[in-house]
Structure formats: structure tokens, C-alpha cells
Image (tube, rainbow, N blue to C red):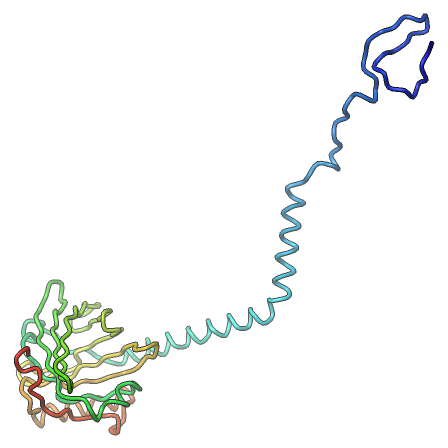
Length: 245
């Protein structure tokens, strides 16, 4: 009995009636065609198209916003660089001569926190010690109504002598602008506080009474960095920190 050609039995019948064991064409797995194989490039193309679609949907607004933020940052950095470049440092600054006890007898600043509290501030003291590599170790004592707040900080030299930064206090730029070492010093500070940038100038005095020469040097300098007289305060004396000063 000969089976129909379309039936799959694995047995092939020859013309002379002999049976041979074999595999029919239906049982031989065919190699997958190239068109059916997954293409890595096609997958990447799909991902790229999706990313492109997202960029097109978000691009206009996001791109403009990012460009605006970058532009503002660049302008701020340029402004800061120009402002700093105009502030000179005491020539041939000597950290050892600058060491010792100073009183902060007057301050002026455009810092909002300072302006809100300036009428309640008291005279603070600063003990300076010359450290390695032109740095300064500074101990500050701030009198308050409820006692004395004391802070230690490292003034880290930046470039020339008399030019510092104080990361612990948010002081981005500190410069001893003018000093005679024996009676007064004018100190410029550019700082960041609570996310806001501001400029401050302090008048140091070796005694709690500033000399006329010291006051003139202070008052001549701070208008040059854009600080008006109504942002200035003369700090009253206090003995709240006298034991720790």
C-alpha cells in the first residue's frame, strides 16, 4: 500500500516497492531567514526614535530653560570675577604682624540677614594666629543676649598673601584691604548665606575705640564696592565674651 505524497511518516517508498527509513522534507528545520533574525541595529534605531520623540516633545521648553539657567550662571560668574578683580589686597601682607586680638567695631553689608539684625548686633572679637602656607587660624567670639557664641575657623590662603576663603563660614572671598597692623584693618568679605550672595566690609581695631584714621579708611573704602552708608552700623561694646575673648 502506497501512502499519499502529502502524508508525513518518515518512510520513503521507492518505485520498486522497497522501503527506506529517512526524514521527509517536512521534518528538516529550515534555517531562519535573515529577515526574521532580530537586528541589534534595528533595536538601537527604535530606542533612538523613542528618545528623539521624547526630546521633540520636551525639547523646546527644556532647552530654552537650560540655556537661560546657564546664561544667568555665566553672567553671575563674570560679575563676581569683575567685582573681585577691583578689590585690592594689602601690599606685602604679613600674617604674623596681623596676628593677635582684634575687635570688630563696625560693619556694613547688603546681606538681608545682617540688615534685619544690625540694630541688635554687638561688638565681637577675633583672635588671629598665623598658620602654615599663609593661612590664618581664627577664633571668633560673638556676644549675644543669652551669652557668648564662639567659633573657630581656618582662613585658607588663595593666591597672594592676605587673600583667603573660609568654606566653613560660606566666605567665598576674604581680603585684607588695608591695615597698619598696630591699630586697624579693613576687611572685605564676599559670602553666601542661606543661598544668597552678599558683600560685607568689617572694620577691625586693636582696641574697642576705633581711631579717626581707622574710621576714615573704612568709610573711604566700602562705597567703592557699592555699599551705602545706611547699611553701616557702629557696634556697641559688650563684656559678654570678655572671659573667652
